[in-house]
Length: 193
Image 1 (spheres, one colour):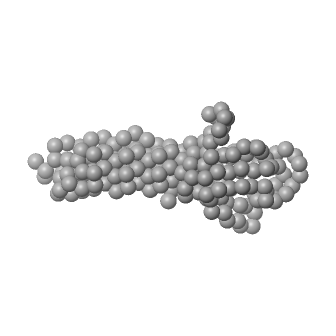
Image 2: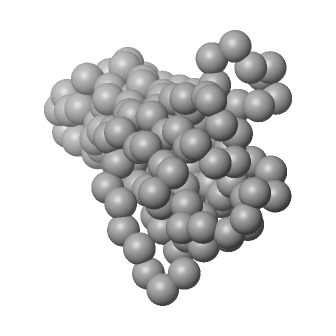
């Protein structure tokens, strides 16, 4: 989990690139904290509703981990740390050449104040599929995000997907696609001509 570009391929025949790894979203907060509305100190886990996540705790923190999409809501305003990784790009396809690997998904780490009465949509970006032979690029990874319906765009958090790898073949290679990290370029196998 957490990205990692799909492997480019090397082949004396037609071959597909590897798929990129999917992203991840983590929300972490101190379980006992004074909420930002100054209404006292309490265990905030009892105020949270999270769908689609695995939840763990340690001595001081609660962690909600999404490997697929879901939601997060709280009945008490709180500050929480976010960690998002976008999906990685897939590797390029090739035919008697060297394809580029997919780019890694972007990483975002920040603090966000979650407010009451809102549902936060958590989206985990899928990894891009590998290219199927020459001259097929790998697909870009998808974005991971935390968004709120009806809120201004600066309230939303995105970790962008990685770029797909470029194909490689006997005639020419091509550049990888742009993304959070661009995909690698494919190139001609040295003894292909």
